Image: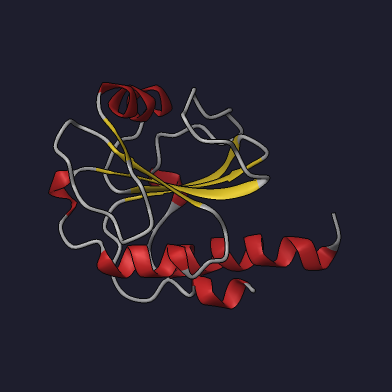
Length: 136
């Protein structure tokens, strides 16, 4: 992988960490493969695992959708919660089982996934600009 190809990941990691979204608080194990899911995996993608009690995720959705990466929405815990137009969430008992298999400790959780494995994870409140638009 070239240095230029790694730069977006480094930018994402630094931006989220600077905003107080610490990967250290995540219970998700880095390097672990994603549990079974209904989508065709991309080489690199963002997976947002959330529930009905996350509050307003408008800023989070805007930021991840501007990242240029495929975004997967996992609506866990059995209460349907909307996503932005054009993004179809995965819901139901299998979506909740997915979140629990990952050991998600707090909703929302954002996973940076590369080649089917969790590269990084952030759990907790997301507000403001994440800076993901600078990845491209």
